[in-house]
Image (cartoon, rainbow, N blue to C red):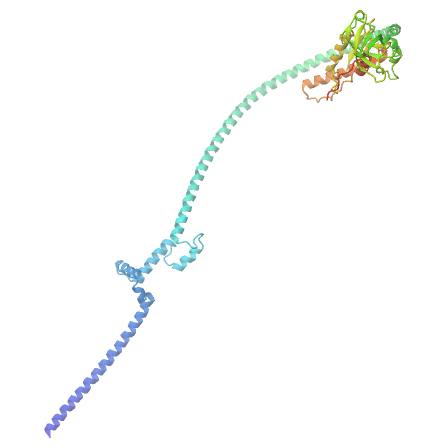
Length: 462
C-alpha cells in the first residue's frame, strides 16, 4: 500500500513538475513570441522608414553605394546626413542660403535671363563671358573717357591761350583806342577852329559873291546885247552857207557822173569820172535813171537806186565798174546818173559820225563799229570832223546809245565810270541831233548812207 502510495506520489509529482515545466515553457514561449512579434513590427517599421530614404533596389546602385562610402569617409555620417549637408553647401554656394531646396533654386532660376533649358555651369560660363565683354567695353569706355578728358584739357588749354591772346589784344586795342580818342579830340578841336575860320571866310565870300553877282549882272546884260547882234550875224552867215549845202530838194547836187557805156555780157558799166576826179578803186555808186529820181520822201528818206556799182578799174577820165546789184526789169542803161554822198568830184564833204552802228550786220549795233563807217568815209575822200561847225556837210547818226541802269551807291568804280561814259554818249547824241535840226545839216542814218553811196551791206550773220 505504502509502495503504491509513494509511486503514485512520485508520478503525481512528476506530472506536477511536468505541468509546471510545460506551463513555464508556455509562459516563456508566450513572452518570447510577444517580443519576437514586437521585434518583427519594429523591423518592418524600420524597413519602411529606410525605404523612404533609399529603397532596396536603389541601394544596390553604384552611385548610391559610392555616396554611402563617401558619407562613411566624411566622419561616419549617414547617407541622408551627408546628402543634407552637401545640399546645404551647394545651396549656400549657389543661392547664399543653406535652407533653400532644389525647388527654390529652380524658382529663382526662372527669373534669370537665358537660364531656361541651360545647365547652371553653362549659364555661369555665359554670364562670365558677358561679364568679360562688359569689362572690355568698360575698359574701352574708360580709355575713351580718358582720351575725352585729355582732349577737353587740351581744348581748355587752347581756349585759355586764345583768351590770353584776346586779352592781350584787347589791352593793346584799348591803348590804341585811348590814343585815337586823344587824336579825335585834337581833330575836333582843330575842326572847331577850322569851322570858325570857314565861317569867317564864308562871310567874306558871301560879301564878295554879292559884289561879283552885281558885276556879272551888268556883264550879262552887255553879253545879252552882244548875243543878239551875233545871232543876227550868224543867221546871215547860215543863209550864205546853206546856199552851198545839199538840200533835200537839190537832187542835182548829189549826182556825181553819168553812165557812158554798158557791157551787158560782162555785167560792167563805164562812168564819166576817173582819176582826175579823185575816183579810187573799190568806191561804190548808186545808179538812178535821172537826177529827179534822187528826190527824198516826206520823211527825208532817199530812194534806193535801180542798181549799185563798184569801181574795178580807174582811168584818167572814166572808170570801169562792176554791176553788183540790179533791179529786175529796170536795167542799167547809157545816160543813167550815178551818186555817192561821200564822194564829190568838185568838193570834199565833211562828216560828223556818231552813235552805234551795225557794220558787220550781226544784228547788234555797237559804238565800236563806228570806226568801220569812219574808215570807209575817209578811204573815199570824205573828211571827218568832231563838231557840227559851220563847215560840216552831213551828220551820220547810228542808233541811239543805250542808257544803262544807274549803279548802286556801293557799285565798283569801273561800273560807275562806264555809267558816266554812256550817259555822256547819250547826251552827246541828243546834242548833235538837235544841232543838226537847228542848223539844217542833213542827217543820214546808216541805211540812208548806204543808199546814197551805192554800198551793199554785208550779209547778216546768223
